[in-house]
Amino acid sequence: MRIAVFSDVHSNLEALTAVLDEIRRETPDRILFLGDAVGYGPDPNGCIERIFEAADVVVAGNHDSGVVDKTDISTYNPLAKESLLWTRSVLTAENRERLLSMPLTAREDDLFLVHASPRAPSAWDYIVEEAGASEQLDFFDGPVCLYGHTHRPMTFESDGKKVTVTQERLLTFHKKFRYIVNVGSVGQPRDGDPDAAYVLYDRREKRLSFHRVQYNFRITQEKMRAVHMPSFLIHRLTYGR
Ligand code: ZN
Image 1 (spheres, rainbow, N blue to C red):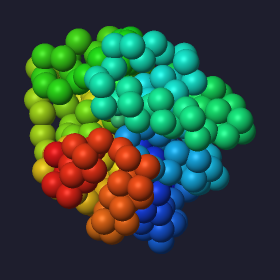
Image 2: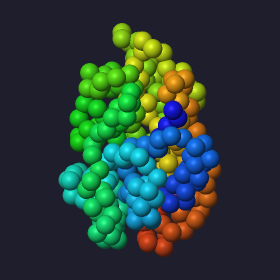
Image 3: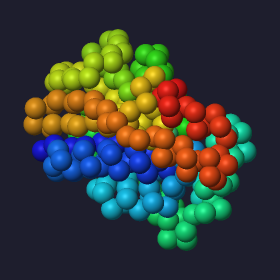
Image 4: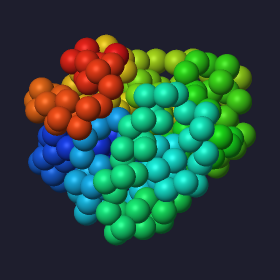
């Protein structure tokens, strides 16, 4: 049983297409999506449609939730807010229904799925270091939690006493350990690598691998310019920051 997992597409159709093409070549048994189909990028409708076509399981991100008014966006940073208001203005009724249908969490056998944090899925907290990760362990069952939200791929592992963080690209899960894994971002990486991210998990082997896929972000940036997206959002795709 092989599972592909991706997150944080952010209306970037070029990155999504590149990742889904590569995932299809890997022929996984299941495909899971961890939220933020929309926000920041120029192709919300196309991305929602392709994600819902490809993924067996989806959970909602803060941008998905904000666009359909399930989350109050008044506290969002000004750039996120600006892109969400634009997204709202172009969203089709059908895709709005799709965003409304996304649950906050899901289970896929040994995997607990959430966009931001198991402790308070709708508070959209950021898990970025060991202390924050260790506070999450009581809030999901099973050995592994997969999440997104920070756009930085990394793995927290707990031996029951302490939590350590690793950026290893290939992990074999230990029977007695528990894991909180950030799968990175397809459409707006923030770890200094502009390539789109996703992970593959082999349930029988208990092996998880992180992957990156090059795509032509210049096309995405052109589309963003055409709809007058803030230039910071356009430029960050070049650097993955
Ligand atoms: Zn995001």
